[in-house]
Length: 142
Image 1 (spheres, helix red, strand yellow):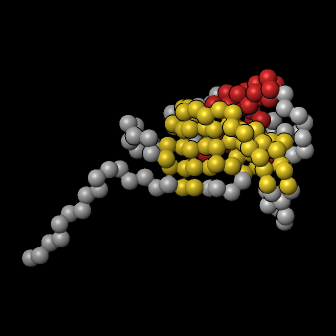
Image 2 (cartoon, one colour):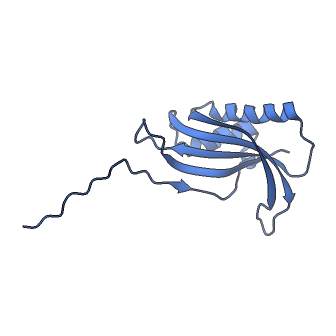
Image 3 (cartoon, helix red, strand yellow):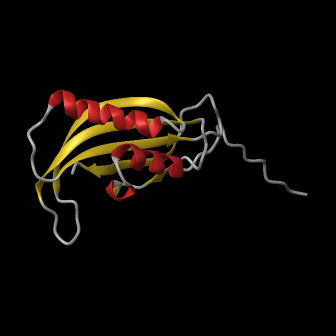
């Protein structure tokens, strides 16, 4: 009887999900509440999921056509590896609002905070393997 040799993966296989379109969080409420709601939903209620979160400030240079985001200038503010718990949204929101208060950029039209989020897989706690990447979370500064 002929048998095929067993196939073994050299490492844990983790899918990579990328959502690169803009996601506007402004409708979820004030910045801290919006980030907390989004992070809780995306982490699936887990309180120990690792993530990398980037924070930026931006403003629209040219408006978009037919619902597109247009041309947006972005300035990075912070980047950190965090553990997604109940306070992560408020902590990240505080970083953004502190930067805005301390730097006091000119009030331009269509100002916004930008956030990038990369959630890491929890299959192997010793490995940092991205599971979900969302580089364009935005919250408009009203």
